[in-house]
Amino acid sequence: MNSKSGQAMTEFVVAIVAIMVLLACILQVAMISAKQSELFIDAREEAAIAAMQDIPVLSDPDYIQSWTAGADESTYSADDSQTDGLISDIPLRITAHARPDSISAMVPDNPLSTL
Image (cartoon, one colour):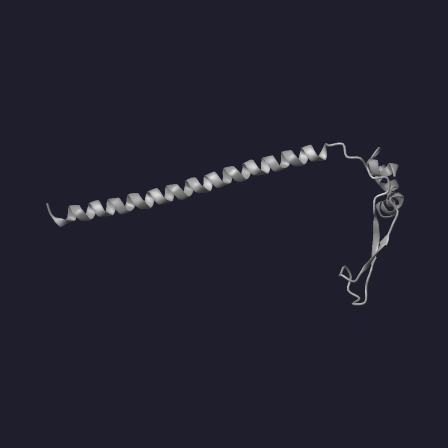
């Protein structure tokens, strides 16, 4: 036997190791993807359950109508103050921009037109 058979065996072992590492990486990616899908499904299930629960509605929740800029005259910063609004004003504020009459002409019996 000459030294060529030893070289072929070494190349074969290196190739097998490289292929095994590649297969291990592919399996890891597949396992991570499967776990990610499982977590997405669990999160959506929990969100659906939480969305369907009967939660008592607050009689008069806090409603921020707008913000007043503070001393730095930059909106939505730490020194701004809120202007409270009434929850009963919400339908009027929606209908002022939504034009429910024109919507009801296009889509009869839509929930927005009842506002």
